[in-house]
Image (cartoon, rainbow, N blue to C red; front, side, top):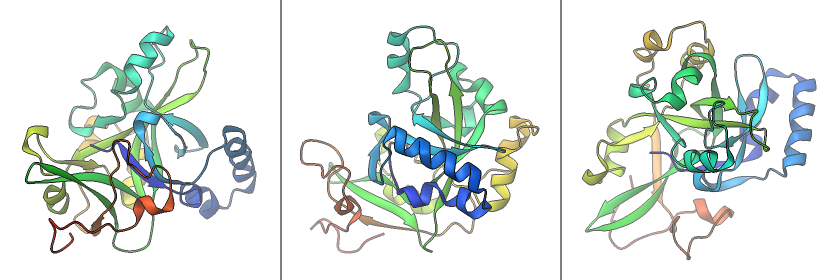
Length: 248
């Protein structure tokens, strides 16, 4: 699962700045101002925030929670957007919402990290997961644009995969099924993922979790309920719990 992320604007714009396309950077900066995008220290997918995404040739802003282009009414759109926050790479073509985007509309999102709960003694403890080296995570996404609704915007889903050993230790509640994590791409995998000429069925085998992926994590304040800190810098700061003698 990946329902909460941290993604400051400078991180989301990392690729645009790195490529050095000043025209694209200016255009996307204007859209950011128009949409009043802000730094995300913790953003919940259920709040459907706007994020900066990249496909093979462009930079664009999309809202988290994919609404397929064939949805025809507002009620159906509201019903589906909470169930399309994530797309499982193993079964990505089995869900009608993801079939076309999986082949024709793949994108990436740059984030600082993501949040996941660890369970101990029937209690949930939120953890913030980052790369050990100070660099953004690049996560695989799908996107779509529905032109039949009044709110004509691009929307997206974060692709997830089976957790590596590190994440299995954190995302450990058996009732939730197998442990999951976002599909974090290395530079070679990014090129493959964005190349929609490659059939998705052939691509899946090349998108296993990078064996050199080095992650770290620390416990943080609650990310659910009335006592959550919301979108503040303190949301990613370490919070010690008596249940833990050591951190992951």
